[in-house]
Structure formats: C-alpha cells, structure tokens
Image 1 (cartoon, one colour):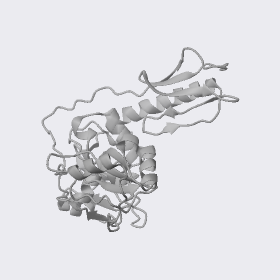
Image 2 (cartoon, helix red, strand yellow; image 1 turned 30 degrees about the vertical axis):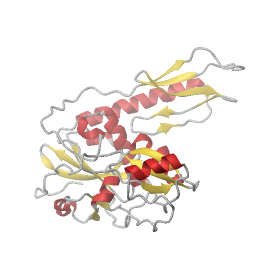
Image 3 (tube, rainbow, N blue to C red; image 1 turned 90 degrees about the vertical axis):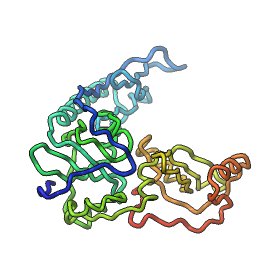
Image 4 (cartoon, rainbow, N blue to C red; image 1 turned 180 degrees about the vertical axis):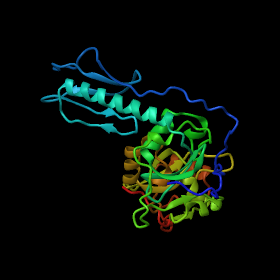
Length: 320
C-alpha cells in the first residue's frame, strides 16, 4: 500500500536508541540446507541418522522410523517443513526445492528497493505493521508475518533490527523477502495497529487503518524478552520477568498462564515477548528463598495470591 507525499517520515521509537550514521552495506546472505550422515548408530538402528544443517550449522535431525525417515527442514522465512515419513531421497529432493526458494527470497530482498524502516505490533500478534521507504516513491504501509519478520532480522542482522521495532532507514531488509505484505482493506479483518507513546504523529499517515496508542507499560511488554520464569503454587500460573529494554525502564513482573507461555515459546521461540502472554491472577510463591529474593527486588509485587484481577490490554490478546 502506498501513501501520499504528505506522509511524515518514520522516526525511531523512544524505547530504543538508533544509529543513523552506521553504513549498512548489503552483504551476501545465504540459507543453504544440507543433510549429513551422522557417525555411529543407536542400539538396534539399521539405518543411519542424518544431521540437518543450515549453512553448516546443526538445526535438527532425521531418523528412520517404521517405513521411512521423519524430521523437519527449516525454511528461510521461518518455521519448518514436515513432509511426513518418507525415504531419504524425498528429503534430499525437498532440500533442493527449499534451497532454491530460499535463494529466490534472499535475491528478492536484495533487489527490492523498498526497505523496511519501522515496525509496530498489532492486535493480532501473528502480524506486525511495517513502514517501507523507496528512494523514488512515497512510503508504504504493510502487514507482515511476524514469523517472517523475525527470520529476516536473523538473516539481515544489524544492531537496530535485532532488538525492538525500529529499523534503520538504510536497513537491508527488502520488502521482496516477504510472501504477503498487504492489509486487506476490510476494517473487520485487519488488525488494530498498536502505536507507542509519542507515535501520535503517525496517525494521519495510517489513513483508514485502525490504530490506537498504547500506554508506556503495555508498549514495553512488546519489547521485553522473557528473561525469567518462576514457578508458583498454582500449576496453571507462572511469574515472568522480562529483560530490561532501556536504562530507565525497569522490568515489570507479571503473572501469566502457563499455557500461553508454552504456546508463545513454541510459536515464536526466542522472539516471544511478555506482550504475547495472557495475564492471570496473582498466585503464591511457595519457595521461601525465591519469595524473599523477589520481595527484595520488587518491593510492590504481590506474592500472596490475593491481588486484584489484572487489567487486560484493551483489544490486544494473544491469538492462540
């Protein structure tokens, strides 16, 4: 989607520092899968196992089950390919296909002049809103798969992309890397764009797209990686503490459902954020040593399980 020439220029979030002076020259990227027969065999195994490598680094394993090999193959845009129980020749064929698709996506990212310069979360945590910049055209607004964006950040690793939502204007992430980039145009289907405090200036650029401005605490949950998970007396509830995102922003411990934590880690892996989790009522911390340490670190944290029900983040809840 392209905007008009009156759109304001995207600028960095107040939650993250940026370095616009660094020279981000596009370096050759690759995502090449290979299968390597593993040395030795487990007891009673008649068929060798195969290590799944990406650029020579281990990313999984194939092993023989009943009638063929089972395992998954990593895809360049995130996620894995599961072709079921098949002969090793079928996996080799799929590897060739995935390698061709990976190179095509990387070539498209390099050649596409539209570069991602900013992202913001949405009310559907499977997607992010992104601004793109073209040297000769108006900025564009796009809806990107969060899984694909996370994969792009790993492939095109630069300081301003590895953490948080701001991407330097000279970022090498070309829009051609993504398989789908458009809002549907239907307000009933498109998610709400979640702007950060100070982003009000972006409102006019979003046109008819729905948006709201988060408060500072909610915005921080979309930046906080899950750093610590603490067990409670309630088997369905855990206490999570996010990583500190800036010098003046203290982590905010919160009780969440164990199921939402497991699912977020399964879907997003290391990219899971505190904002992906479903809040839960406070629960008691049974371990006295852990409880004492938490009380010393967070003096206002309720640890007796008698806190009020948590306040939901309006229209944002994980889509699990």
